[in-house]
Amino acid sequence: MSTFKAPKGTYDLIPPFSAKYLAVREAISAPLRKAGYGYVETPGFEDVELFARGVGESTDIVTKEMFTLTTKGGANLALRPEGTASVLRAALEANLHKAGGLPVKLWYSGSYYRYERPQKGRYRHFSQVGAEAIGTEDPALDAELIILADQAYRSLGLRNFRILLNSLGDQECRPVYREALQAFLRGLDLDEETLRRAEINPLRVLDDKRADVQKQLADAPLLRDYLCDGCKAYHEEVRTLITAAGVAFEDDPKLVRGLDYYTRTTFEFVHDGLGSQSAVGGGGRYDGLSEMIGGPALPSVGWALGVDRTVLALEVEGVELDIPPATEVFAVPLGEEAKRLLFGVITQLRAVGIAADLSYGGKGLKAAMKGANRSGARLAIIAGERDLVEGVVQLKDMESGEQTAVALDALVESVRAKLA
Image 1: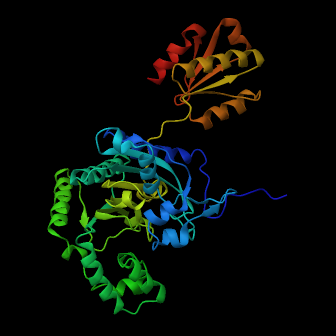
Image 2 (image 1 turned 120 degrees about the vertical axis):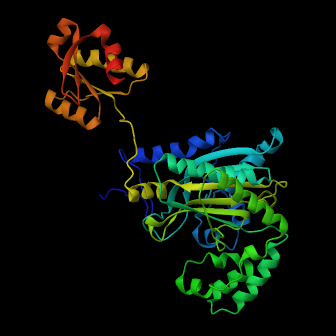
Image 3 (image 1 turned 90 degrees about the horizontal axis):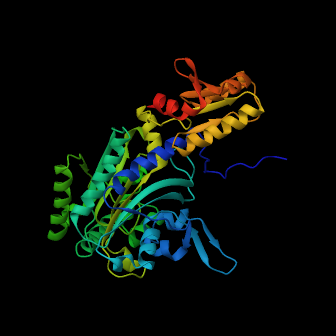
């Protein structure tokens, strides 16, 4: 009988590699928690219409990449392909926008699902940390989120990433640009599906990654030339605030992102060491999304950073994260009586906040010490029959090899002192 394997395009996170993912999630969320963002968690699946309306019916995500299912009760659901629509739905359902002052600031972490052609850096199941500031139109919020993401990446030691920035305009100026772009696209040699997409959402064509399409787009009209005065002033304020914070960025007039709900500010974090899958995260302002999914007008801004892509970027740069060992103290009992005693000792150590483990299964000294080495522990506690008679254990420094006898009643303090 063959064993089961993870579905195609997915992966399992296994220790010790999984510790990198935890460290990245922690580093990305830490600046958010200090800036007033509260944690939110939503279901792994939602009503399929939430994404059709919110993400956009012309996007690849909705037309090609969503995992959909029909329940026994006949409901049409989709595994969540992104986080913003779900988080906004949860905030609206809980009436968070009525509970106090706006904006409602939320952060989240979880797995997302898209039916894609699997390749390095692009999976059918992937991990993101995201943040949303809901209910306020203020360029300072857009700038805050970009700065917080920059801080998160720099705290990890990541250096060779770039921030691309653009404005997509609003309901006043974007329709004018949309018409100009559609007129331009109709004159190009594009396939039927791309022409159909141009009629539904012409900005989506600018995001086409195919070289032959990009070549034809070289002279496409740019949105920045069509921005109304309000959008120009808003975008300039975002740029001013980011610059004042010492965060470098590049203006990218063709940046549109892959979702239909963005307005005004849009941005992307890219790492050139990742090849074709260079985006490690991105986001922008989505002032009309709440109305699209049946809520009141709640201008909002947010981003999502890919944990998988961030880990790859760290590897490309050769950044080794400072991950503390999972075990600080490893206990090696020699005999049943010693095991009972040391089991009590490691329970006591854990209770005072020290990461401790034990050699299970009645192994001999040599095999048990191999386990101590593998654990990465700084200290080993060894106890045999003679030690029990004398009321001591042997405390061994795994780095220096130095070993000393310590009285049982002084053990916790001795361990603390050595670890400090």
